[in-house]
Length: 163
Image 1 (tube, one colour):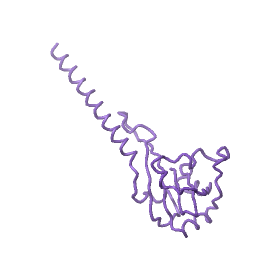
Image 2 (cartoon, rainbow, N blue to C red):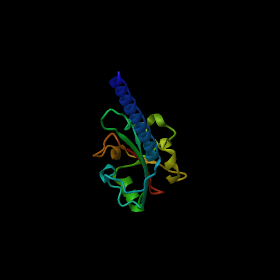
Image 3 (cartoon, rainbow, N blue to C red):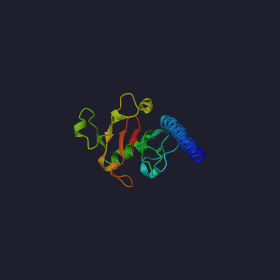
Image 4 (cartoon, helix red, strand yellow):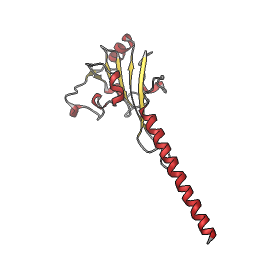
């Protein structure tokens, strides 16, 4: 009987510890996802040919549950805004044949991610009246084909990326 009671206390203690650890993980995750980062984008291959940008702001969000007790990787989604040098913005637009993005015709978009879906914490880093261009060829450039969606405003030298 004593052994059963001790065993029950051990199980309850483990469950309590797991709940506290999971809650702590969720709180940490929420804070981490809210953070707007300004460090250089790594790996730079995800955003090829953008040159030496002068500033960048980006965020990451978990697509799965990294706080789960089930082991395994969690995929992450990223959004960011980079300010390019004027010559790099022009070169990028020409090299990958960026064309005007029709925000008023989302059904014509080859993907579901658009500038309208930018995360609220990043909106203040976007131009007030952007003239977004899009390039399917750039989105499909290695190493991230199918995962990358980028919009470029050459006039404001602004690159909006969604990975």
